[in-house]
Length: 281
Image (cartoon, rainbow, N blue to C red; front, top):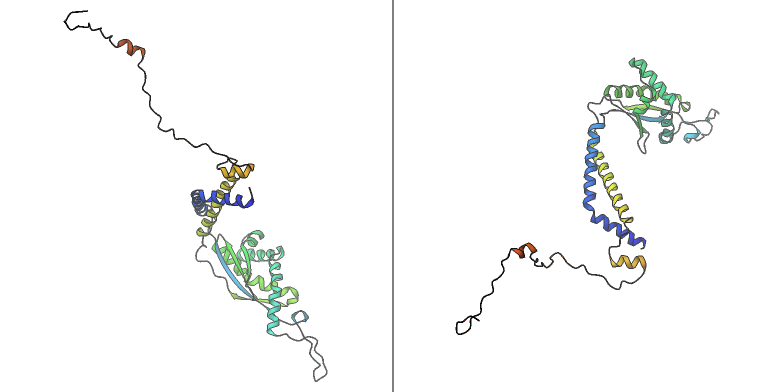
């Protein structure tokens, strides 16, 4: 049997078992809803948005040399255009993001936060709460802080408003700085638990499990169900087939009387024959 025939066989098996696929999809939806409602904790997010910008020009930022001035003094470095500065800041942003993910920077943020709040948070707690996202084709990046406590998320985001510009000012010879564009705001409510997304994932998993069961059962089923399959498998012609006779209504046969019934029946008495003259013979 060729590949196309196998694929066709699997597709037909899936179509015949569509009810099974639907049932498993519904089971997946219910499991996704149950998991979300019982095992997903509420989280609170505070965002802070920064703008990166270059503060001075050099060769890396596309500097061009200018001719000597009228007083005979030459200028080795000149300030680049705003466009060149922006391009340089955008080019350097991924590098600064990697610096923000280092343990050294996160330790500084954690120590400053613990000192300010008189707390004892670990470096891993602060680091795992942060998500840095670059805005495409811009020099803007956003840091989202997500924890199970609204106050903690807000405090970390506030600390980043101070720590991130300081770090960028001290890195790479202070060529790129950062300014806060949107300050952190304390979350008024918890984030969405994502019921639609998780229920959809559960439905997909259910369909995949049901389809895998149908496919495996079809592939490992060695029974021959038609004369075409027999011809394809053994490459011999089918000369004939035995019809399936219907034997659901057999002819009823009359049961013979038992010996006891025969003994209970009275024997018939012989009647005397009478001739025409009325005399007994």
